[in-house]
Length: 191
Image (cartoon, rainbow, N blue to C red; front, side, top):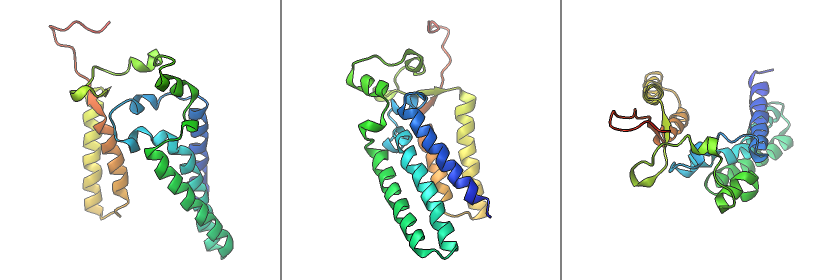
């Protein structure tokens, strides 16, 4: 038995569990990136966890059944994988309201204010009034350096083009972030 037959379905189950936690309102950490001017595939990625988990599980089943010469089952799971991937891509750009937790729907309607512990994580708006996530400078610049090293490794070892998806994810994440500025001597520290 190959390691991926256990790892990928386990990862799929983990994604589904995280999707359930987000929908139930137990996980709010995604709100920081959701409320920024990040591209939709970065902002809305948390809402695609459910179809992503289903796609991982069904895709693994597709390959396993194909290797076992069970063609009918492999085709059925391949169709399920494609359907889940299509839903994933659609939800990255237009997440359905039913996938959003109640507290987020209430905030978007204006019925309740932002959770204070989450609203305080944002610094002052960046250029154009867009909200930004402020990271400590060492983290921000370290992540840019890690992306650069990853790209150089990709060039050096002639990895497949698929590895660039991870690089694109990292760059998209950093594009929604800003290094935290230290308050100047003339500025009063925030209360």
